[in-house]
Length: 255
Ligand code: PEP
Image: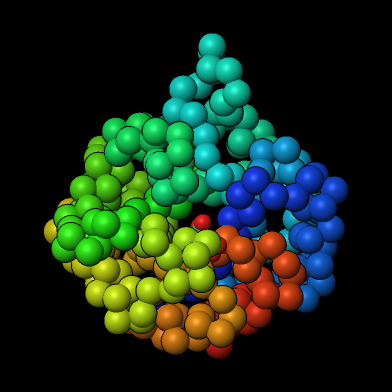
């Protein structure tokens, strides 16, 4: 089973609408209409429209970094799936560790968002991953299992085809400490085993599982060569065209 590699840039709270459009233009100039790898840019909400416009007619897709599960209403500061769809957003990052630790996203809330995204034709990039204390306490696999099963509760086999999973060890995010390839592959294989138990092997083999956590052009080739690592969710290295494009090229080479 060949899974198409997938590279997503999570810009977090960086780039104005104008800066985002300029970065997008630089990336597109370097990779053109690349189709060997799926590429997604996830700017902040305020740059979705300008980046979306820059992506018109291109193969690179637009993603958001979060959303609220309700359709509309009194949720000051929040954005719904329908609002994202109206800006031609295709993917949405859900359950990022920064949302979980700084903004109180629980597994149950992430699950509501996942179901709402899927009901609105948005493809979730569902993030799971352990903290350093959890890893040192031997709880990595249990934490990943809880977050994965919690996030996917009620997701049908048919819907699973639209879901991308990102394994992001919290201790490796933005710290420069990348998980070793063996550490990453072990958890990726475990995630695929869990998906196999939940949905059966044929579907589990189709799901892309991304690694996230200080992925850079220097460490990407080795990570992307692992059997169950199907791409990357990139933070810091997605903020400059040069490093992001190198990561896309590494994914093409690993395909
Ligand atoms: C992220 O936040 O999703 C991430 C992987 O960040 P970084 O690449 O900067 O570690």
